[in-house]
Image (cartoon, rainbow, N blue to C red; front, side, top):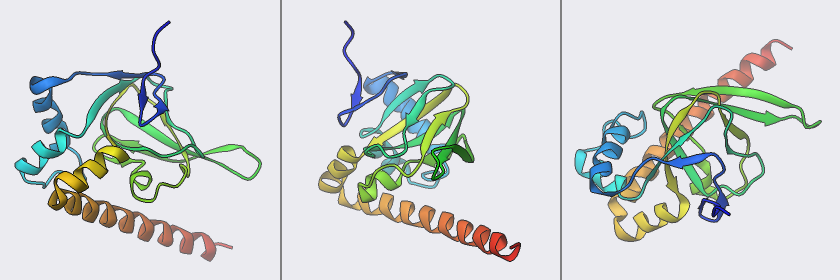
Length: 176
């Protein structure tokens, strides 16, 4: 019987670890540098961050995380596409948004520790870099300057998203 892969104690069905070691770290650095969130980090910070991340491949249809589950990691989508789905009050799923390469998903989970607010499903074969909540806490302890830099980026990203949603809400309310 094959052992179940987990990240911070959560099952990772359908996730395939892409590589490890010094040689693969260089690939992780290149992937981090291509993401919107970390594109303008200095190379020293990218190399430091790469030490705390794992890279996985997932096939189309793989549930990356599920609404209501404990959030223990955020993902940088470096290839492919995922969709964010949220259930309505009757339990019927609705697509909220499609996320493309270079973007992040699940970042609230490493900040607030609350259950996932939506489900994330790979709509194409995809490559994800994962930063777990445990590894973010290691960064806080081992590299506080980097931790603050990451937190500032996440705060800016969430602020931008909130502003966008606020604008959409106003548009929606104006049409009623």
